[in-house]
Amino acid sequence: MPKKTFSSPLKRAIYSGRRNRYVPHLQFFSKAFQGILYNQIWEDPEIDLAALKLEENSKVLAISSGGCNGLNYLTKCPEKVSLVDIQQDHLHIARIRAVAARAAPTYQHLFDFMAVGKGVQNILFYQHHIAPHLSEEEKHYWQSPMQQLCKRYKHRIDIFEKGFYPASKAALVARIIFPLLGIKRSRVREFLKFSDTKEQTIYFDVIILPKILKRWRHLLFKLPALCAFLGVHPNQIKILQDETNLSLKDLFIERVRQTLTDTPCYRNYFAWQILLAQYNLDCQEALPLYLQEKNFDLIKQQLNHQKLDHSYGSIVKKVADSHPGDYNRFVLLDAQEWMSKEDITALWQDIISVGGPGARIIFRTGTLKSYLADQLPVHLMEKLYYHEEQSRTLFKKDRLKVYGGFHCYEVRG
Image 1 (cartoon, rainbow, N blue to C red):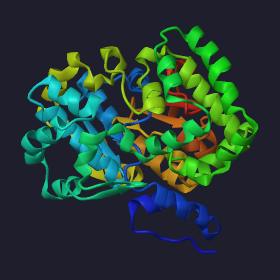
Image 2 (cartoon, one colour):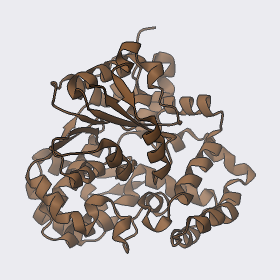
Image 3 (cartoon, rainbow, N blue to C red):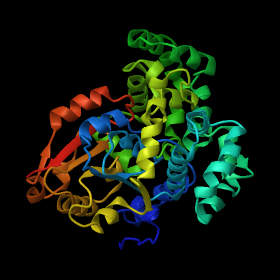
Image 4 (cartoon, rainbow, N blue to C red):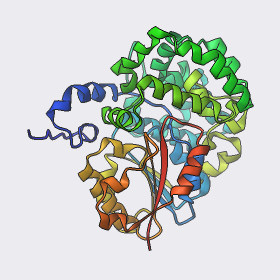
């Protein structure tokens, strides 16, 4: 049966290498993946930075998602950071995030807009300081109406007044699912006060876990919308179930438990976003690097030097269109689990050519295994060195355990 062809980079990525018999699942996912699915990135930048080893001559090409990590990478003063994404809404968020960081007259303006993400002062900040730096297309996007699941906004920019972080599809789904699992907001706030992982583990196992395990609640994990609105591609679900032999419920419990108990909650902003869709505003250490006051002037300086750019499209095409030496650091997130074997091979062949000796590449997988040796021909694998021990060590330190593995490769000299 012939494969479908698509003009949209998003649909090309979603349907990559799949035949028509997969269409019903992918059509639903394609619709769910539109709009503001995430409003921040869900990969720990501290782990990325430790593996990437950014220097002043580092040229980073990364999948954007919410765009936070592009700004976080600038704290290491690389030569440039290029963000690319197949999802237009996420690129708009990444751009407004960068403009806010560059245009903010004071740290308080940026803190209110991107850390608090709520309040009428944010609309004034947008009107006076952000909008003048946006293109007509971007202004039209932010000033247009938005329907986000059951919520409607007169203007999309209003989410920064009413609550930016709770406005994503992922946050809206979490707000519905957690009460159904018996996880009450009052208990969540009590839990997030802990600074000791032993206390967190006991609280999770004694208070939270028994509620999730109640018999009828397993039905929630059979809802296709749950994974789709969290951005989990149907192919990733298949890989997880094939490799782990665990149900979605068991995988959910395992990953959430690790995220909420492996790192002190007070500084784990991923735990705060998962449970409350907000940051711990009382602790600078609990904010992303680009939102910490100590980095405010540095980030502005890096942005004023035009070190960050954004583009629409797939990372496969972006690398294919690049020349040797254009980039030497690559951040693939979990995109390979969406791809066909042919796309993965083409991507790595181009990465090796563009990056050259010493280039470093990082990505994440749903399970501990890298899969790369199963996907690439031998002659390409021979050109790569897998930092396996470092990858496993860094993954253990990752504050977000929604993935099963973190991997760092380097192009051999």
